[in-house]
Image (cartoon, rainbow, N blue to C red):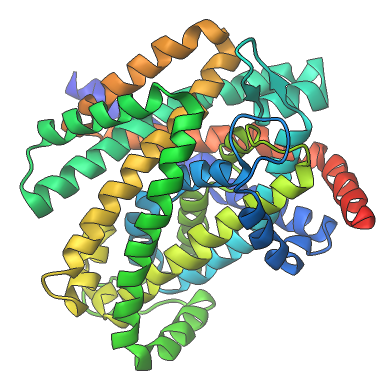
Length: 449
């Protein structure tokens, strides 16, 4: 049995290395770059408009299930997660400080990708028998590309359901339980039970209640974590410019071994910066447009500008703060990785407090990710099996939370990470094929405006 499990792990590792290898990273970055050029840098030029649209989106602006603002908060609840804390630290550990530069690049072109995803999700959406507005890659593939591409829509939905139970449920529950055990001494089973109860109470209300809860929790947790990070950076204000210089320099030159850091090549900086950037902001995976399709708006472009702000906040704000804290504290040379590195960096500057900031951040980030990904998984399951699957899916989703809290999840993490890449493939192909629609709708909107 052990031999079989080891062989399975090795096989999945091989597949993971292929699907997250250079071709995938080039495809994701290339798609974002192509869309950014086709949009004539609009996501960068209209960043202020995006923030105004987020503010205006607190009110209903058309048909849908949740306000545009709540749609963004639902997306951020899913994307602002362990990747912002543990993912950034892992990128620095494996790729050196230069990895942060490549995370920035991923986010900049990822804004165009997220914008295009949301525009297509709003343009090609359906209403089910319950009156819910459904959209996302499976729908814009089906409605935009036609019958011969239906297999690709089905593949995306299948990978989305399976990946959701991994990266969006059990892995997150495990992160919460481990953080609660380490920082507060709470037994794993108690964390799992409490999370499943709170998640169940929210999930019973569907996407409307998830949107409301996310709108309350996401700003709170982001402000708490960002404020802690800014306090650390203020304490090391003289180190910020040197840290930024180090990030840019190491992005284009190998990082030498120093302290517990074993060194990294330029290729490693690019690979892990891009991969962890995508893991954090999910631009190109096709998950976010599922929530944006439910927005109470009749304007795909307006919702697209709201969507691109999510990538900006997730990576260019929260991930950057994590990365800078790790570097200015000097802990990036400690040899630690993952959440332990981020915790050590905060604790180094804020003894007795910093560790709790990271722990509370991990708990809240991971819990809201469970809520946000439940929307993605449910919509994918509904596409595959119809409305009858909604209640059984929610029950199973809640039951898997304590399982994740108690389990050893190395293999599950690996499988889910692989499925994430497999989700991205059909979505990226659809984005490229449907890009003329995105460009046309954008031109028409800004010509009218």
